[in-house]
Length: 182
Image 1 (cartoon, helix red, strand yellow):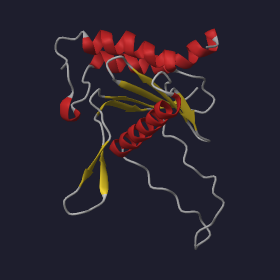
Image 2 (cartoon, rainbow, N blue to C red):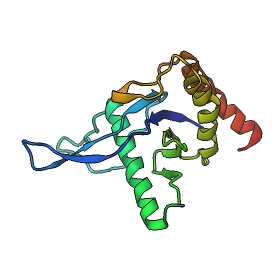
Image 3 (cartoon, rainbow, N blue to C red):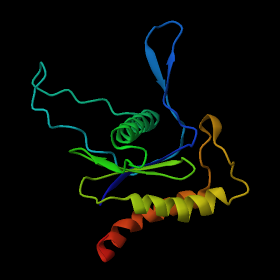
Image 4 (cartoon, one colour):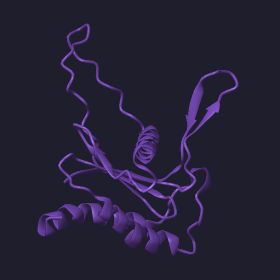
């Protein structure tokens, strides 16, 4: 199992469309990503066989970490809302898979959104994301008196113990999966 990235979005995250005064087009305003960590870049989409003018297919520009987080949140928000509209409020969006990666999603009772992007062979990680929330986030961020309760304006999680715990969890997780076959 390969983990590409991990994100936590705040509980106030809304995907509201605002009208920009100089334009009549709608622009998205995204939730703040309060924690993001990349380990390995996702594989680029090279499935297109169409060649460019010089015979080489144009390569897509790599996204910045901020743009990547915005794209992930927009995707999760859209899929979660679509799932609820089609299946009802009791249905939950858990994960989705493309040809290159799989996105896993867990929303806490306090509306924090935990998202992990892995390779396509990984099974559902909803329980794993719940464990990261309970064992790491609650223990090292929520119970930390120096950590802010709210994260307004993009102030992220700044707790060294939490970051070390996430790093250890991701490094050791493939070993746990192999031993227990989860």
